[in-house]
Image 1: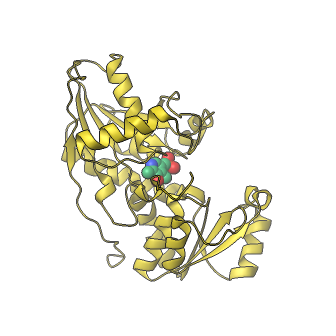
Image 2: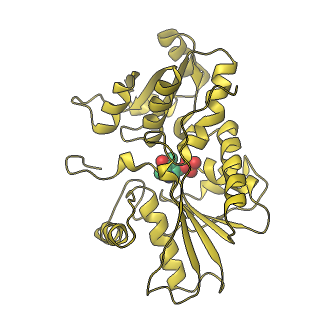
Amino acid sequence: MGDLIMLYQPTPIQEIKGEWNRQQVRLLIKREDMNHPFCSGNKWWKLKYNLEEARTLGHHTLLTFGGAYSNHLYATAAAANELGFKSIGIVRGEEVRPLNATLAFAESCGMKLHFVSRGWYRTKISAESVRELQLLFGDFYLIPEGGTNHLAVKGCTEWAQHLTREVQFTHCCLPVGTGGTMAGLLEGFGADKKVIGFPVLKGAEFLREEVSRFTQRQPHFQFQYHFGGYAKTTPTLLDFMSIIETAHGLTLDQVYTAKMMFGVLDLVYQNFFERNATVLMLHTGGLQGRLRPNDSP
Ligand SMILES: *Cc1c(COP(=O)(O)O)cnc(C)c1O
């Protein structure tokens, strides 16, 4: 399957320095947001082996699910377009035209958007719903919501192996949605590295079980940095985001990476990390979902 490789641009690691860091903790951020213009960050790694599998099984169409602002829908549409798959996006909620920027982009990549009620969406992976989708759309390769399955975990395990070869660190911190990325990283790192996940959803205790579906390794979570829940923000978070962006010349998004970075800096401030720890933060990409003046979150 050597021919099925999406564009991948090597990404830098940036050091985050500041007067506020008196704890002698070294802070690095892996700028995986720069790996691909449209299928960025962890989504590149989560899709990699799914795309290979779809091709191996002879499918020509990818079908997946997401909300109207989903990074996963956006990335899947871009990947399908690049590799010559057709794509179908099952979108939660009523169709609103004009489409928001996320869905407009997906459609411009050739993704066929199919809007379903929230009730239907909840049952989307039941055998009956999948049969209904097959009647509507014919044959497809199904990628779950958020892209998390064992092939996504495999891709993130490979990412962890790359990171291990690239730089020395003691802790790896990342924002967590479904936990698929975190599970893959846990599998790929040696026991000398601690992985700390920052869930962006409120009430995310289910993640312990979810992550343990894919790995025996023990995940560590910091549950207190969700800022009200998925896609919720506060003035504090948005101020933090703009201060960091200006001071360090990088771009964050309010849904994932800003919350994780706020959490990490807060933990540094609270002396959570041992002296001489090296903390590698992962910029998981998804900047398409960054607040824009005409979009409400
Ligand atoms: C999807 C996404 C995540 C969450 O990844 P999971 O594997 O679902 O935990 C984190 N950050 C960004 C930017 C994302 O788009």
